[in-house]
Length: 254
Image (cartoon, rainbow, N blue to C red; front, side, top):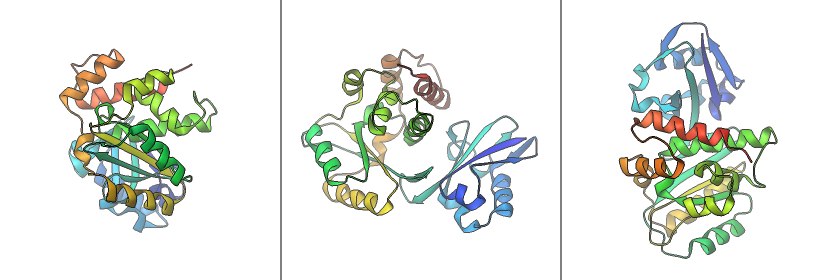
């Protein structure tokens, strides 16, 4: 049996957060066909608007829709709101975007954005601690789950995201490890239950910053740096290393 977790529009399409496919194995394409047959709103399952992860690895980096899923594998389907790194995650609209260079004072920049967009949760970090967009989506999912279970380690989701991203429950250390730095590449993570507020935030940063998601991609240099910061082995492939990062975030305690 294959269990399929559904988020955002995919969850709305099927009407539940998870479904089971009673087969020992299936391709991603076959899973999507199955979901379409049980969906009340199949328009929300357009294949170009979905991200499908297998054991926390984007299937696009495996064999795409031909990727084979076996019983016991963890399949998650996330709806893309529109191109780029804009997702629905549970009830939140989520925007992840890279910035080639931060030229203003990082602290003042983030404070100004938070004051202006009170309905949007905003975090900004050094791009060197981001091991691909899947890394951030996974970390935020863990933070949201901690909020639901009332086991958050901090008083805000923005800070919860930061400490779980950096693997430390010390806020000052988390800022030192991942804080946005002037004249370096950065990353904005913004999420809100109000899509229009997030769109306004997106429009502003597009007009003011040189956005480029290439700074978010996994690399050997990032793997070495993160492995050193978190005391991980770095002789791992990308998917194994990503799993280590998410497990570290999930088990972090006070």
